Amino acid sequence: MNDSTISCLPQMTDIWEKTLDWKPSPQQQELFQRLYGLILEGNRQLNLTRITDPEDFWEKHLWDSLRGIKFLISVNEDERREEGKEITIIDLGTGAGFPGIPVAIAVKNCTVNLVDSTKKKITFINSILPQLNLNNLKATTCRAEEIGRQRQHREAYDIALIRAVASASACAEYALPLLKQGGLAVVYRGSLTDEETINMENAVEQLGGIIESIEKFNTPISNSDRHCLYLRKVANTPAKFPRAVGVPAQRPL
Ligand code: SAH
Image 1 (cartoon, rainbow, N blue to C red):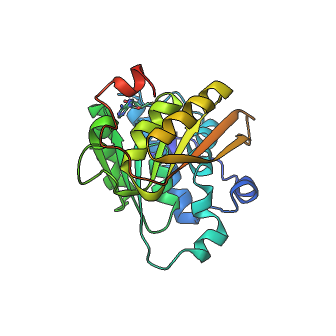
Image 2 (image 1 turned 90 degrees about the vertical axis):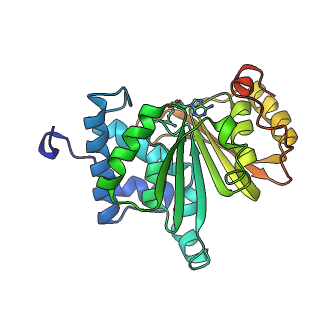
């Protein structure tokens, strides 16, 4: 498949501006388009995503990825951020690169480590990175429970992103060990029940964090429900977390 057979993504400038106080530059728009083409192409060999229609891809992969880190890209934030301060980001269970790749395209001065336990997904991402020409991204095959115990990664990140990977409390157990003190985990979810929120509060407390906020919103085209939980790391995560591979998902805190 070549580029001419791949539909154009919509621009949606008004929606970007209205909902995120941001709009992509022409270069960023081109990268989004290129990413879309590469993922559709990859989808012919691998089961990467079911979201392939251009408008759906724009909403569920691009807009949704960036809505979670709106606070990093809005115009005011750009002005406020110390010049040259680099933000280190980890995306756990990235799949075909979401939310991490759109974040690496949109956020100035960041490095993003994309992590997934499925080797073929990381192999795919590594095969497309040169074509995106982004030098602030790398991809690693690893379980979240394992990378959270590695000295060079534990307590090393400013921000951890995690979308559609596990229950809310398992996501907290994966993400919080990787954050520096003061760092923020963004847990992207569709629905969120009161029970999940209560379990999450209990889990986060054991992991050295607090729930700083929960944002509930709808996606701008299909009006689907979304929640983002923002977890702030306020104390060291005890050494026993994350527990062994499989345990956080099977026996959530
Ligand atoms: N974040 C992407 C993919 C979600 S699918 C998106 O929103 O589009 C969930 C992904 O998480 C899968 O690719 C799976 O391999 C990965 N995954 C599940 N448990 C994991 C774990 N414990 N450590 C690392 N990756 C995990």
